[in-house]
Image (cartoon, rainbow, N blue to C red; front, side, top):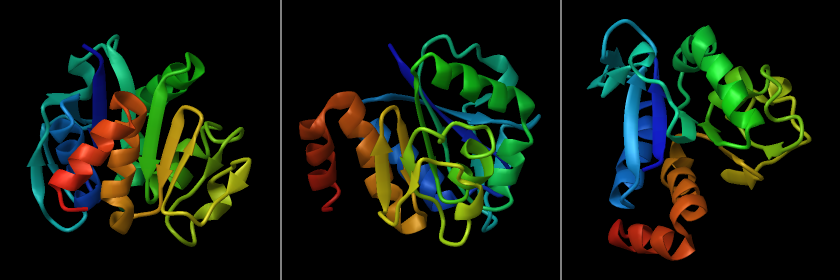
Length: 182
């Protein structure tokens, strides 16, 4: 079974990370949360501790369908500073794999890695200077090829539902949204 990996670093935006986990699991997707630190206990930007399923180095990612980054500060910077994660993102993207980032992460991680140069993208307002994308958007969520980007916390459910729609189909995304009263 293909897997969606969601990467957590200290300072992650809790709404974006946990909404993504919740929505994808409601859709029946296999989701693994991954700490990029030496401990599975990761603390969000607003002090919420979350236990990740695994440590980065414990996994081989051969079954990866999605690599997903929540935003938050300094979470996005901490993700960017994880060189093995950056290498994995580049390799997965080059093979045509799906990648997704929301809030600060499109600008802090994807943009500097050159992952958005051929895509339309969105990020948290005021951070667009480092998106390095084909076209910046003001939409809440942008799907461009194999890349999904989101604007910020208010877009968290819509961001996750876009991932579900690309993976499981629009009907499944609408079913999950209806169950959440969205």
